Image 1 (spheres, rainbow, N blue to C red):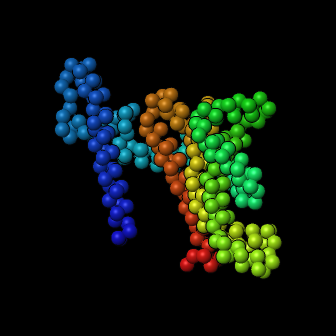
Image 2 (image 1 turned 30 degrees about the vertical axis):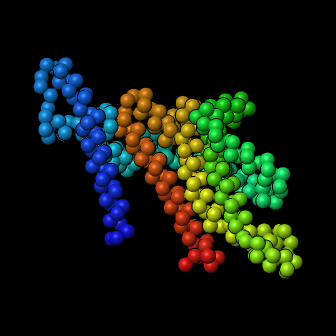
Image 3 (image 1 turned 30 degrees about the horizontal axis):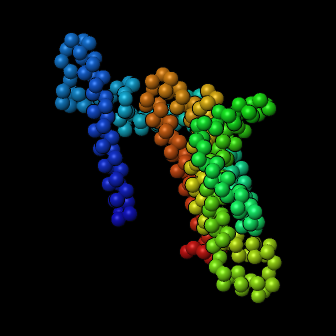
Length: 288
């Protein structure tokens, strides 16, 4: 309970603040409608009840978001185009492909950086500079260029996803591959170990905790990239498409439900990486 209680306390505080903010932000519409009808606006509990049950509120109440999330997830067939399972899988497929591409690219760059001084001096600054470009600015350009060469659908979104996810892997792996101290490196030299043997038996092993930490960050960034990649294309499927359609028709509850679905997907994937991390490090004798 001592681990659960602080989390529950923070969640409860957020929910209370959220309900209070919903009353304050949604009250203006009720007052405006009452003025148009020439009647007195509701007061007290009646006002609170009305602010928490609007069809298109400025800020949906938590129970409205949960109800929409449950209905869109469990109340419809997974193949339905109104189901969050359907849209979530489309976004997740682009996320996983982009994550795999970004992770592979990040590891290769990190290996090159630690073994080649020229790459260290040239690639790393460019990798850092690449992350200063707003993804919302570069995503439409990537999509237009790829469409011109016939690449549409999953691949452009995966490339945008990889663009965001490779950087944490590069930074984490460079730090991890350089984590062995000089005494360990000197010991392998006394054993006449080659550079490849030093890499596989010392550097790569030492980098595992750093790799898994960067993979968690990269997975979350990859999901963001997949959603952003759906926005400029006017996509009809995916969590980004749900956000677009909700904004077009003023369906704020739908928007919030899609946001929470994206957060749940990201949390689930990060937890899966955490499970893999614990099992891998335990097998390697680096964790209990």
